[in-house]
Image (tube, rainbow, N blue to C red; front, top):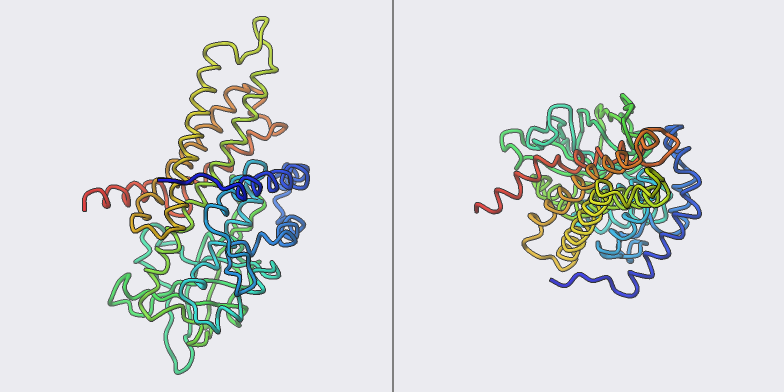
Length: 378
């Protein structure tokens, strides 16, 4: 049950908070307004070794555990969710290679990703197979010493920017989800960018459709055995959902702090509005929910680090609780600030928009409830 932060992790929190407040905060509003991918922030994270933070040391990374990654993701999201997503997606996208790639594949691709020289993308979702990954239609047909990939993936973060992709394709349609295989795909002929999405939140994170047209990928770039792709995807999501929970947690924490500061300074009826019971009780509930989410996220991350067999259910719980909390807390923060909170001059408006997607990606919260309930009924 122990999941306290070590002194090193507490020091890490202070270090990342300082970095975020000094280097990221001045850019956060502009990043959102411009909707342009913040290459300067990507380079900042790379220079700090954060884009290789979760990659094992033997492949050029730091080999950090998931709990430490959650601390980083939380502190970055407290200031700017888009910046946090740059960190989160790099970890998510390389994880299938870390757990299922051959040594040759790992040594070929991971060091550049660890240095932040290339971005990575996790390519699972399709127009007709979001929550139902078993309905994957992108096909990988073996032709001698290569696989030929045809199909489309959608809602791919870093789509069109990434030079390294973890791609999940159907290799045996007759087997359903057991016929899915995973591949490490670099820059190959036939891979192109389709629609670039215009989003409610995380405005500067590029999310795009990827089109695979006779893309030829060497057999040795397959991640694991043929037909093991679904298991690889689920293991990846089990280890990334607490990190998405940490991102949501950071958004909630940032919104809570904005609301508290406002309630302390804003006067109504001759006194700070925070002393009015209606507002004060809202703040109390917000703070309690944030702390409850934090404990669940940290517990799930700790379980992942010790390879606990019950990880799946707690991973789903942590992502669901933290993202639901982020949506509620950011909504309440806007309410506490009244008309001002609805204006783009104040960050809680951006935080509210950014929070919404955390209830959707990495598996919708309805799917998380399905995962939890099924595990309970086994």
